Amino acid sequence: MRHITTYQDKKVLVLGLGESGVNVAKLLHQLGAQVTVNDLKQFAADDPDIVALRKLGIEVITGHHPTALLDDGFQYLVKDPGIRYDNPMIVKAAANHIPVISEPEVAFEASSAPWIGITGTNGKTTTTTMIELMLNDHRKCGHAYADGNIGVSASKVVQKATADDVMVTELSSFQLQGTTKLRPHIAVITNIYSTHLDYHGDRAHYIAAKMKITANQTADDYLVINWDKAEWRDLSKQTQAQVIPFSAQDLNEDGAYLKNGTLYFKGEPIIKADAIKVPGEQNIENALAAIAVAKLMGQDNQAIVDVLTTFPGVKHRVQFVAEYQQRRFYNDSKATNITATQVALRSFKQPVILLAGGLDRGNGFDDLIPSLREHVKAIVLFGQTADKIAAAARKAGVKTIKFAERAGAAVPLAYQLSAPGDVILLSPACASWDQYSHFEVRGDEFIDAVHHLIAKQGGKPCE
Image 1 (cartoon, one colour):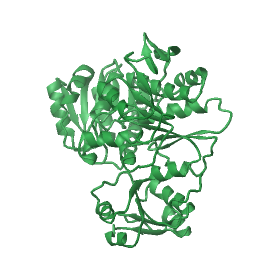
Image 2 (cartoon, rainbow, N blue to C red; image 1 turned 90 degrees about the vertical axis):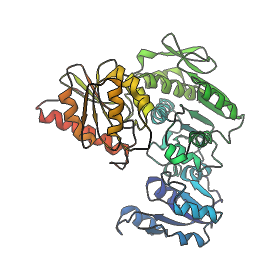
Image 3 (cartoon, rainbow, N blue to C red; image 1 turned 45 degrees about the vertical axis):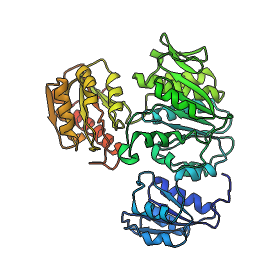
Image 4 (cartoon, helix red, strand yellow; image 1 turned 135 degrees about the vertical axis):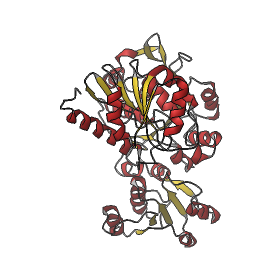
């Protein structure tokens, strides 16, 4: 870790007591800042995180957002990525000309290790994990750490990472919007579709947040970007970095690409597409992005092949859960938008019993109709959007439409509707926040329900 002086003796307010908030508060304390942490939620006095922070001399205020606090001479506000910019604390900070930044911004400034930053609408976590595994395969010096939006905050990892290591950091649009100095040596944009528009306001602002990943890059850096849509190719013109395209449609051979069933990098064959263990065409794209990064980092082909032939996929991303009575159960709770569910459905040739629904962001689901028509034999719906998705399913000609209270309750209904050879897929096409604190909680409930179903039937899963 670099002991920078940016925050030394500065008053910094950290908004949010989640994983990133707790760890950035500790990092800022190490960097000499006078730190206060505030969370709207009321925490118990003996909460382990609060106890640990207070032992360091960090003031912790919970149970309300006292906007008057911002009149007390704070020089920075570091916010949790999930807190919107119309939050009264953020509005007051802006009015008081207090810079509002995100946790990765602080972590990057303090990092001794070089950064690889990965963003995109879909595929971020899988691509991040593939890159981490590839860079660690037979690594002789240092370690590649997957961190950021993947679940472990960059602020936590940066405190132990050295110049021999590398930070492989997944970055959401929420995190990127609060950056001004972030400059990964290699930036990856997996794709950009329309999502989180309730947070960003419109697609233009969403794209602008995503493009911050390359805003400070120079000609010494690299931007690895999906080349398969004209819009994304146009976005590459905004960077000063060296552009390394990847394409699953054989549109550009200057980077990583799929051609005649083989994945290449700059003319060199790397691996046959059907040798990649994790299913789905989306994982061809993820693999191409990861290959480009691994090759730019000097990794050999064998390490890349080792990973792609053994990596089973990331939890909650078209994750195989179990097989029972010739039905295969998959957990794709991370599919929090229509595009992700479309991609998941295309991963299967078998008939699908789809479990879907969740937070209503105001959008319709007609874009899902072709995928429902082609892949789905029955659907079980839950959450705020259940009726909206049901309307799309009827237009698609799905004859069997059922409703459940939650994702877990949908599992036995889906099993009753299934036949040998079918896939039972949780791929909600919606965020989870109407019923769950996180998509992972929703996915874990689904997994538990699958195992409970199998046990209740007196069976044993074939995993």
